[in-house]
Length: 356
Image (tube, rainbow, N blue to C red; front, top):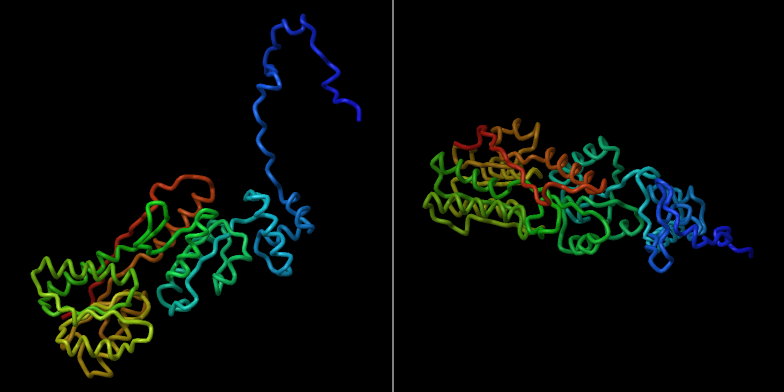
């Protein structure tokens, strides 16, 4: 092999004493030359390594179908080997919106409403959305820029914690988030606080609470509820605070609170819990709302207002939460800093006719 062209030209002593040409870059001795940065891999490098076409690589990176599972796995494994992070110019950004598979209202209610708002918010930013039916099964086969976790049990949270070092994860309503995690929350503490204050202002003394067992948002609301009771000097009767498990009958839970002597019940959440409670009180127990017992629920837009009676509710800013999460994700995947990793948005009391 002939020597490199540059090796044919060896400067003389006279040449070395000449001043450098204007605008030229001084040539440093080989021993002092800076280390050249490693060349970034491209989708063509990935295609060669995975022994597939660039078109197949593009379909995998954009989470398109018509790719055999074994081919998809080979491309993803090769991408991980190359530590490939393709530029947005060669593919759309992709985000997965997750809830744990066993969450009861993935089709309607809190998770479904928030997922819909998130999907619209991302589509307006030209960010692709995938909705894995089973995150534990589907996530390994997806090439993602990040994840929005709408609901998460301990098992899913453990999986996501392991992914945080490789991609951006934004949690919705994560009240136990670490300083390094990203989260958008509704002010559930204040939800409980202003619900109790509203009952107390109407002369209620025996405040009941119905929520989900071992569910962080419900527990956060209950903390605010207790604080308002303490500030008002009212006794806290633990029998009136019922946290249900997935298998608990709502009829038995509501009956327990009423028989304990409650004159009002706060039933938070936007998964129709308050409407179910209203039905039980009215049609199962034969009580009149608000004459016999008052109730405050979570706001279901377009539905809470047409109940009989129209429900007094706490409205959570689900649409704004989705917009903030999408904006945060947009900044993170564009390489920009977010103003704050933790955002808490205010709630609103809507006063109707279910509290006397």
